[in-house]
Image 1 (cartoon, rainbow, N blue to C red):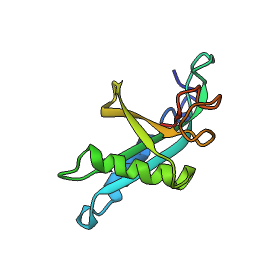
Image 2: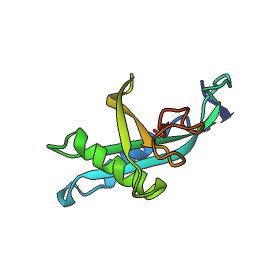
Image 3: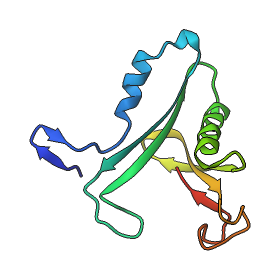
Length: 130
């Protein structure tokens, strides 16, 4: 399920490796680690309407003692407002991914219709971004 350039070199299949390096370098005496890790990834998938062999992945991570899902939500809200504008709202949907716990998918209120429904958001008022 990966693309090898040579027997020893392969294209990145996910953005998770940056998490370990960042946690190792972070000074937790200065507060929690809050990070967003975007990047292009490559997987040997069959292209169809919902899958591609090359896509952009974004991961969010908040690490420290005594943190909650609210800390991650705040980090994601900051990202969404910086990327899509201060007036955007976010919606977290609980989801299952076998490699993370807890897991959520993130939607942003539609920039075109303001959340009432249009062709961009498939009449839902929301666009899935994470």
